[in-house]
Amino acid sequence: MLHADIESVSGKLRDRNFNLALQTLMPILYDTPDDLDALCLTGICLTETGRQEAAIRTLDYYLMLGGTGCDALEAMGCACLRQGQPAEARSYLLRALRQDPCCSSAYRNLGIALSQLGEHEDCLLALQQAERRNPRDVLTLYALAPVLAHFGHNLEARSVLERILALDPPEDIRQFALASLDKAEFRKNREPS
Image 1: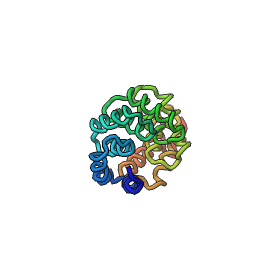
Image 2: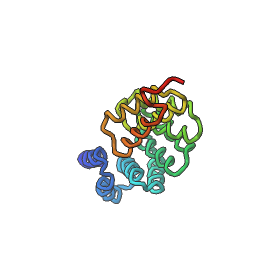
Image 3: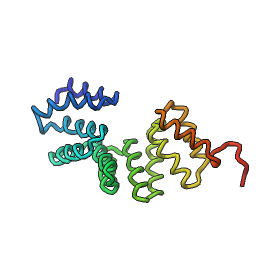
């Protein structure tokens, strides 16, 4: 893939314009179907636009060709999660973290997979790793707050919910944080039991 194409697609990904990025990537893959960069980016875009089966096929092909990038492995994990396959997701996300142990979003998604597998203590550890690596990631905080509450860490959960609101989150996450803060266990002036 040409440097200019990578820059163009990367900009579209940063702006979350996944369908526009796919419009740039499809002609590249038509001309060079084994281009690892284009396959990786296409897999990410397909995952983010809800086309999980196509994403999995694309990323399987990328991996078959020898691709090993953290982004592709994480996208494969996310596609598996969205397909209701948390064990497979865990496997890909752990591989992604071996490639890039500092990838906060891979830790977040691993936490979600572990939660779905009922591995709540490991879920909490993974989400805390994600938070340490990117304390301003609203999606990590959104996943972390209920897990903290599950373990009875209500003051920490309240702090996380307040941090979410301070970050100007998307409306659905803002509503979640407000509704959660309105619950009795999170009220500041709650009487001790």
